[in-house]
Amino acid sequence: MDPDTASLLAQLDADLEADTSLEAATPLLALAADYLTSTRSGEGPVSTWHSAQMIVDRLSTEMPKRGRPLAEVARRLATALLDDVNRLAHPMYIGHQVSAPLPAAVWTDALISAFNQSLAVREMSPSFTPLEHQVIAWMTDLVGWEEHAGGTMTSGGTEATFTALLAARARAIPNVWTHGMPSHGPVLICSEHTHYAVARAAGEMGLGLQRIVTIPANDHRMDIAALRAKLQQLHASHIKRDGRGGDRGVHRNGRVRRPQRNRRCLPRIPRCTRRSVVARGRGTRRRGTDVANATAPRRGHGARAPLPGTRTRHCCCRCPQGSCSCATRRS
Image (tube, rainbow, N blue to C red; front, side):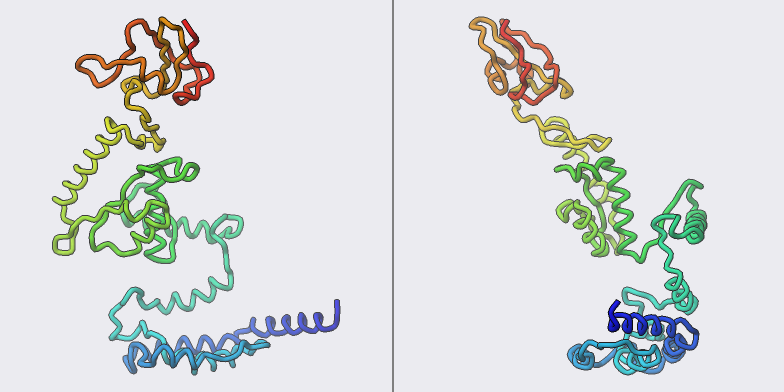
């Protein structure tokens, strides 16, 4: 190792070692304590009166080439940033979007950051994963859910909404993780006053903004009558599309139904099979859409039946019309 690299690594080790003591952390802890004390007293404004450009000009400096002691960093924070923060613990703060953290959570956050356990897998958090399960069990018990109920911790309402909608999507379309969203997927019904996090989640999860169905509100609550009417309308349109419309639909198990590409090709035959028709007489082999030309409608029915002198049988490979290599042979 060259001398310059060795000297740099030695300096980094010394800086890291110096920051591990309680004495090094005291200036930063003192800033937090002073903020909580002064803010709760109601002194000063809730937010800053300085313009954004004034704050930008104050922070416009060259990137530091070397590290600084935590005491110097604390002084810099106090003069450059802390005077212009939103004081969430101020008595005049109206709770816009975020709330003031509890002092106990502020001090515990330093401990959590020091441990830095990953709850993604238990081997990376052998003691915190059981703790999370226990806390969730307490929460589900308070709600009144059954013992097998579960959950997870999120960073806030946006992540919680996104997680819940992903779970709902997986329940409605079990194979969505593998096959993606079908062309006629589910819809998301919400109030007209729903937070924009719902629309954002719908776009991020692939559902799309056009699949959001908003229900008008009555006195800031979802109108139940309008909700029932919309549900009936959606149910009727789903039956029309999925039953007789020949459009692509979705089974209850999430699998995508194939559309009827040619309405003349025996639409009333079960979808799990394919039929091929051979016309007797000239003995020509007919495939694909040519089959439709050998069929005629039954009287009083919308489906088409083979012409006299023809017979039908199942295709052994269930392939799409016109691409079967095992089409019925000449009679």
